Length: 344
Ligand SMILES: N[C@@H](CCC(=O)N[C@@H](CS)C(=O)NCC(=O)O)C(=O)O
Image 1 (tube, helix red, strand yellow):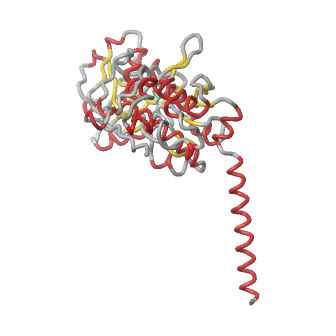
Image 2 (tube, rainbow, N blue to C red):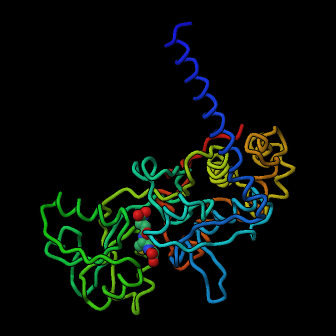
Image 3 (cartoon, helix red, strand yellow):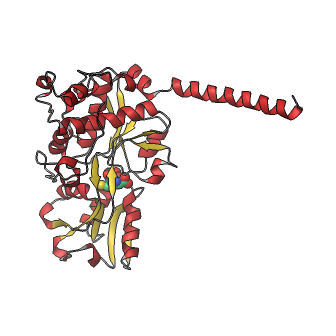
């Protein structure tokens, strides 16, 4: 062996050792094990956005994103109640996840390439297809976003909203003045105090925010949707088992709706002879194993939280104050975009 060949061989051994070490280190910090040992899921949510994530005066959390925390806890720990909710602002949310303070971020967060790559996050799916809109005072008589030339617009920092706003006005060759806030309630207060002419955020949130104003009837949401905001749960990169669990809890809720498995009938459905239902509920196959869970993981999520349609209607749809239509969030079988790969 020449000197150079020996050096190359030595370097290969050192590299393999390092790879082994980092592999071992990451195996030790598997999120699933941490969550199980702790006996609690730590879930990053909004500081207070009705319909998505908000606590009531007794500190009880609810919302579509909150139900996703519960469904994950039910699947992983057997109990939807074993969740500690960590309210995060737009700015804090990503560091909370990167630093390991939270196990999963369920907080009306848009899946974008930079968040999915440079920020070290992985989005597990889309639990709400959204798009950005504007709210204005009815009295202003504005009917479309394109009439907002010269307007002052209240917007929250650290969001895709801020970036889309700039694009929209640039594309339409219009001037505007952004009034930027760190917190939503500050932005809303400024809007209500007439410091800005319009308030902009994801359309779903505009419905919620409008209800937070002192007189909702004085405000309208304009018809313009100026961006794509696919919102969904995010995890840290590098823990593929945890990523797969979070992703398949979402798919299980969707598959349950597609198969008409509901919170109310899930026990009866355990006797179903439909092969898809049997696989979903762990009566056939061994699909929990690959996730590091038992085979009742999806049963527990549906039993304790309901299927996707139930979660949607309860929090943001017909059973809520927001009354948002299923629209893009309908199942693919009903003209919507929600589609889950099969359990098999
Ligand atoms: N989906 C957008 C916007 C999400 C967002 O944080 N929206 C604000 C505006 S309503 C919010 O939830 N604020 C709550 C708060 O920080 O008080 C994103 O991921 O950047």
